[in-house]
Image (cartoon, rainbow, N blue to C red; front, side, top):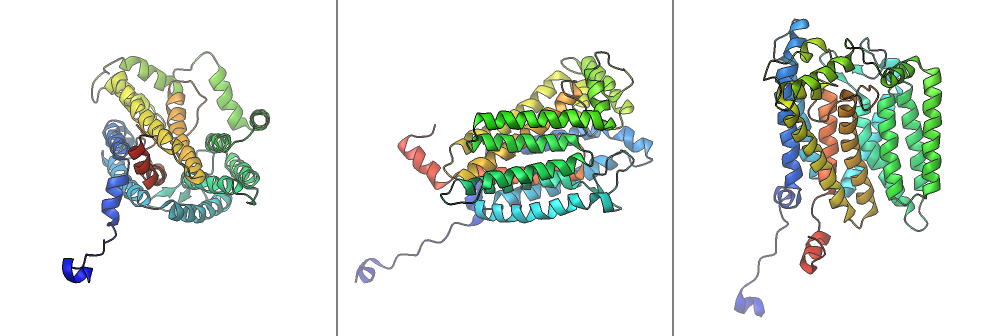
Length: 387
């Protein structure tokens, strides 16, 4: 009768996924990621032409490839950021299984490209480094296991995640890739701390890491050489670290000028591991501060947003992904200024590398999916719980 008098009301339609995504996604962090990628292309224009010339390629060969793989990474980021936490968890667990199998098969099917560490699969037209893709899905998988342990009667998730972390880190160390192994363990340790691990246990784990490092130093010439070079108070000016520190010192506050830098002609990895040295030399400390500020902004903003979450899985996975992103940036830039021992690790979204930028896109997409606004945020704003 009411419908006859007032007319039938339309049934509310479900909000389109694109509209809901744009309304809930952290647009500030999304913008910061795009700025990082554009800065990476700018620095690639400065750093990669000398390498292309040495290899007899088009001057902008590496920049074009970075733009292509970067676009793939950004698309992957946008797709992943539209997933629900449940779908994200499912795909991450499947992805972890696939990436772990790829790591196990590296000694048989992988190649080292003459660098002494078997970390890549050669596809002819490109190469794939599975450890880059392993990191984000490892974090989400361990977060799922730890969150399961918080349910009454749940599985021993913390113990299972510890076994997974040790196994993955051991496989990476055998390549050898101590940098990625350390990053994996650090991200897991932080998540374990957030999950409520007792301090004595964490101290015991830290002691175990120190013991493992001592063992590696005594039994791995590759590891010992890097540690000895780091501890040596005298820097050989003809080494990569020597060239990088000299370039940063020469750049000063405003840099020597666009295209005037010399480190890109001396370093074979100026466009990857030491891209921050190119930025410091040609554009100065000012641009380095901008890059550091963007990494800090993305990492801290994500940590603040996930700290408000009630869902333990979202809180743990978001913490691990944000820490992974921030720590990799710290390691890359710390190596360039000799605060850390040399490690072959890229600067996310800035360094050249197809696997690196695509994997970083997936990781940041997952993080954006976990930090989007949810109904609990709207309720909190209504009652004044959030600023």
